[in-house]
Image (cartoon, rainbow, N blue to C red; front, side):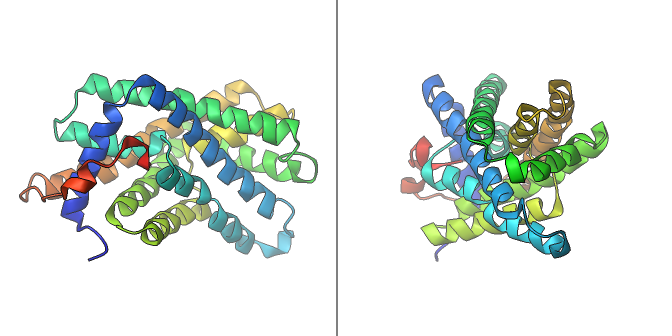
Length: 273
């Protein structure tokens, strides 16, 4: 069988969460930067692909952009990186199973969140602003996309964040379920494409697109923080509750623990989110 059952994926994810929680600060710092940068590069690709698309294309242009955006999470999960939205699912599951302490969960979240922000700002400033890839002919799309995020009231952004990380959490879950490279890519691609096409809000993606508009002279840093806070909280609920807690209750509270193959349990931390 080329994939793990949901019961087995639960145990695989718990082991991943333990590894992430016990990672040293240097590893989390480097991989957190890469995670923020990779998601931002995926968003940059989105802007470059549909930024000058004819208005008449309507939602078809959105679908095209959503189809290329997943490259960021693919790079993280298969190339190596730490992404806070993925950790909201994996590390939380390890905590629900009482395999790590709450302080270790908070430590992981704190370091990865800060470094995701640094990576996103790096791409937004140097590639988006300095090189000009989110400006010029693409500025209107950059500003409009950022503005659509900012205009949502607190609770709308919060609920949108839940929807986003429900999808992202499932994307990470499916990548853990697949045993082969191609299967992992497909498992990541469909849920991520779906959340982007729908328009749900992802906190690390917003850490890129809103600063890209700010560096170009639109909006303010207060607008940025007023968006990031509710989206971050919503993403936390989406990953930790709608994925981790639900599957924990289904597969760890009601069924015997699935036996995970030893070689999978000992996978290195750098294997991805």
